[in-house]
Image (cartoon, rainbow, N blue to C red):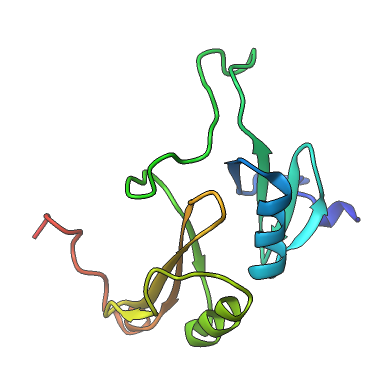
Amino acid sequence: MSRDDLPYPETGLLLTHFLTVADVARSRAFYADVLGGEVVLAENPCIVKLANGWIIMNPGGGPTPDKPDVTLRPPTDPNTVSSFLNIRVADIGECHRQWSAKGAEFLTPPLDRKAELRCYLRDPDGYLIEVGQATGMQQGVFADPPAGNN
């Protein structure tokens, strides 16, 4: 493992995504084997380099001195989401085929949303992941307003 494999910027900042997971080994396998990431640290915390970003995973737990009133836990209701991982790909059809063949279960096939083609899947803990390919956006066609905001 080289320093370049780990999310440590020499200057400025970089963005990582932290997930509280129920089973580190299961989640590590999903992000590495299904989505094609590279495990750069197996545990404490688990770090998977995924394209030009990193997924950091640890089990949940109670408060710590730096977050005294916060408890971490995986999602409990798959139908209520406040944030999700958004992965942009060059060829969503190929991505959908490859990841499905490796066991990913998508909610729907890729759908044309005018600005983009997109679909969603869940990781082993139920985290929602959007996979999208810009199409109309490249010609100035952008997304419709969110549902209920017409």
